[in-house]
Image (cartoon, one colour):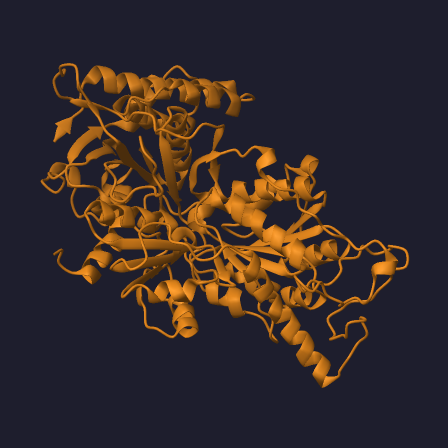
Length: 622
C-alpha cells in the first residue's frame, strides 16, 4: 500500500504501453462523465484510438453514496485499433466506498487503485455495506492502492477561490483528472481550453476547475506516490480528418447528410426517452442543413407527424427506445400500408416496460421483426459501432426512399453514449439520393402501380397537377380504390412482403469479417456485439485458432448466401445481449441448431467472455 504521506520518491520510471483501460466511478454528482469525457478527448487529441462506455444510474439524482447511485465511465486508449472500451480496467478511481465496492471486482490484479480517502467515513462505509474500512486492512493488498485525500486537497487548492464549499467540492473530479493526466502523460491544455469555453459566462468556475486540474497534476508530480509514469504512443490511423463521435451524434449527422444528399427536408418527430433523447437534442441544431425537429406530446403523435411529413414529400423520421416502439407500432403499420418512406430508430435499452432505462440490451429484435398487426415484414438494420450508426442510418434512408417503405434501425444504449474516433467522410464519397417523385401525370397508371424492379409505388407530392390521389389505411387496389376483394388483399399482402426480396437483391451478400470458410468455428453477432466479437476472434486467431467472425447489419432481409455460409462451419456461436433472439431466427430460417451466448445484465459483452466460450467450444488445441 502506498500512502500520500509517504517519503519523497525518486523520479518515476517511464513505461511504454500499447493500451490502457481506465475506469472512474463515484456518485452522479461527482462529475464522473465529464472527467471521463475529457480524458477521452485528450487521449484522442494525443493520437490514440479510444472507445468509451459511460455507465450511469437511471435516477437523475440517486441517493448519494449508495450502490445503485454509482456512476461509472470506462475508456480504453491505445496505440492500435480498439473496438471496445476494454475489459478489466488497469486503473480505477473510486470517489467513495460505494464506487469501490461496485467496481473493485473488475479491476485487474495489480492494477492502480486511487481512492478518495476523505469519503471513507462511517456513514459512507455503512451505505456501501462495509462493516469496516477496506482501506485499513489487507482486503486491497492485491492492488496498487493510492490513498489520496481528494476532498481536502481540492479545498486547499481552491481556498482563495471565493466559491462555496459545495462548489469547491464539485471540482475534485478535475483534481483526480489531473492525477491521471500526469500518470498517463496527458496534456492538460486541451481540457483547460474546454473549461474556458464551457464556463465562458462563469469564469470563476473555469478558473477553479483549471486550478484543481493543475493542482492534481502537480500533486502527482511532486508528492511522488507513483513509481511509474505510462506513455501510450499515437495510433497509426489512415489519413483524414477525425472527430470524436458517439452513436446518437452519428445518427443526427446522418439525418443532415440525408437531407443534403437528397434535397429532401428531413422531419424528425420524437418524444424524449432514454437513451434516444439526445438524437433529438442534437438534430435540433441542424435546421440549417435541412433537418426539422418536432417534440411531440407522445410517441404516437411523434411517429404520426413523421408519416405526415413523408406524405407531404419530406422524409419522416422518428426516434425512440423500447416502450416507445410499442406505442408506435400502429402508425408504423399505417406507413407500411400507404407505402411511404419512414425511418424508425430504436435505441434499445434493458426492459421490458421502463426496465433499466440507462442500461444496454439487444432485446427488441423480435419486436422489430414481427411487432405489427396483419402481415407486414419490414427492413430491419442494426448499427455495429458508434461511428457505424452514421452509415447504417444513411443506408436505411436510401432503402426507405427507394423502396417506399418504413425501415427500422436498431441502435443500443451502449452505442448511443459510447464514443470513438470517426473519420469525417469527404462529401464526394457519399452518393446522391434520388427521391424519384412522380411529377408527370402522363406516367401515372395507379397509386399502387409498382416499379417492376423495386416493387415501389410512385411517390407523389400532394398538389401535383393531374396526380391527385387517395391513400389510407384501408386496403386498396392498384388504382387507389378501397377494395375488400379477397384476392386483391392477398395480392397486396404478398406484394408488400415481396419488397424484402427486392431489397435483398440490392444489398451486399454475406461476407466474413475475419477468417475463412471451413474454419473450426464461426462467431456470428449482430449490432453492438461487433466490437467484442471482432476483438475476441482476433485474439483467438493470434493464438492459432481457426475461428471466423461475421457481424450482421441486415437482419431483415438477411444477407444473400448467409445460409450456405453457415453450413460451411461445423460450429456456430451466436452471442447476444438477450435470451437468444437472433439464434432463434437463424435456426428457424436455416434449419440447423446453433450455440448461443446470452447475457442479460444491462452490460455489454466483455471480450474475454466470448473468448472463453469460443475456447470451450473448440476444445484443447492440437
